[in-house]
Amino acid sequence: MLALYLTGALSWMFPVTSLPARRGDSLFAFYQAGVNLRAGVSPYTDPAQLDPALVRAHSVSPFRYSPVVALVFSGLSRISRPETLYWVWLGVLEGVLWLCVLLTLRARRFGHRRYAAAAMWLAFTPFCVELYLGQISTLMALGILVLLLDAAGARPVGEGRWRSVLLPLAWAGTMLIKVFTVLFAAAYFRAGKRGMVLAGGGIVLVLCGAYFATHPADLRHFMAVNSGPFVGLVYPGLMGFQAFIRSIADHVMPASLRSVYVGLGPLDVSLANLPAAVIIPVIVALGLWGTWRLRSTDEFRGLALWIAVFFLIYRQVWEYHYVMFIPVVACAYMMTGARWSVWAWAIMALPTPYALLNLVGGGMEQSPLWILLHAAKPLAVVISFVALFPWRVPVLRPEAARVPRPTGDWGAAPAAVPALEPAVVQRVDWSVAKRREPAGAVDELVLAADARHPSAGAEAGE
Image 1: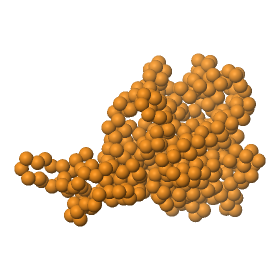
Image 2: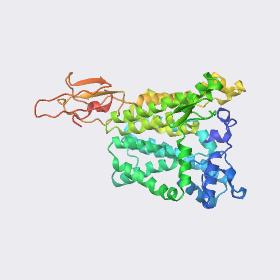
Image 3: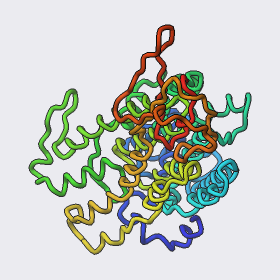
Image 4: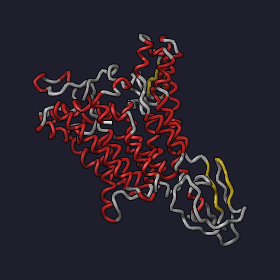
């Protein structure tokens, strides 16, 4: 991918000409935030409001990351010019990508599937946009991969004391780069890992709390820029589910109606964003419900589900963000060999044909091609969300024979499971069955995922 990017072989496929950002724009925003921090100025200050003598790197992207990121780049800005740092940063991103490949290949418990999963990292064209902007989503992808591999049983950081130290550090690192992995707390609570939540959250609070405690205005800015509920303008490179919904609304709704606002609780919502305002709470509720329905041992599925939730609800999901979704589809394929993971990856990996927009010319926002352009990658996320959600659970009655927990995946049939009586396992949808045992016995209930889920071999009474 780096070679294709450097040679410009794929430049016609990406929104280089349609982005207001120039090459290295994101990296220059990080660089300037570091310069500001060194000068005693808020890293969140708009460059237009800075003293021109202080501006070392020009960027149209606002700095929306934690002060720890600004602190790192304050050090880098001491030793390098922004243009030089950009080319060094390309090497860093490529190195991190190969580290992800190596970790995937080391997951030997998944057999030959790990080779195909490793190839998913190397044939993913949104990585070119990551390189173009000098982003840090690949660092996020590395942290997410470590967490998902561990949840899948691959133990990328080993066992014992090192694992108990490195996993909270990996999770905290992802939250310090892009805060959305705070959503993992729901999955960790369901898995009974309260220590993980306390350790990871404590690291973030210690590193960021001291700065925000002394700079409350920066905290307000950080919260505002990262928690805006709805998308505004839909740019060509904006590839989130919200952008897709908004592009449909812009296409079918007259301009006079799109500018009308209605009160929705504490929010004033435009009619163009009203569909998103209804759908987003439903997705969040489904995420919470799905997490509750999961077995406490199905940590991978819980983490992956919340990554999908983020991609469905966040207002500014850019094309390069999908690099952070590779761990989900790669790990799901290694664990299950499921076709949905291959299809989802393929849809995300294919280059977006921005060159076709030139055929439309002016008014491209009103063209059906505009909707199709923003539909493909969100469709892959929807496929992943539907596949990961625990729609059905089997119920094992108390008299079921105790069977060994399979070491395989949640999508494949468990091996060597002792035969059960036909009446022992009942499939129920959307409901939970209870059975009252004779006097002296206690009610016992086991929730599991699909009959193909390893929970089919779960121990009764867990």
